[in-house]
Length: 159
Image (cartoon, rainbow, N blue to C red):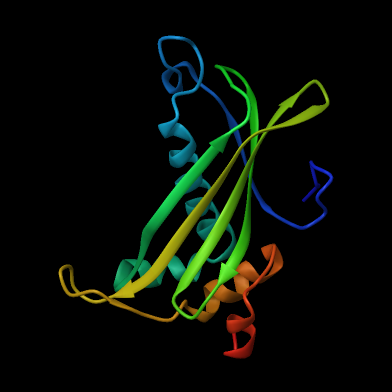
């Protein structure tokens, strides 16, 4: 995977072409779409890099989004080409923190237009009685190449 920014750390990339349905009356992208794209990027990462985790999700594993944020630096509009770049920021026994860079690609130029963050908790159990569980080993291994900075606690505890 090619690096699109000066940052040389690896990332999982989702390319996206913005559509009219993702814009508001003014013509720029409606803010909620950035959060949707974070979820889509995370889903495609699982499909591409950790498909066995999808079987675990179909069984009993739940990935709860505990928090999500996005900071906006520039507007984007319909037909802008985006590179959504996901990195692992932190990995603990039961939680994962991802960062997302939204980079507009235009005629050979790249511009960081937004940056997002998402904390996910791994849970198991029936609805109404879910409990924290360890991040599955298959997911830990799939995330390893995309680490921006993995917490010391994950390394010490066999993460």
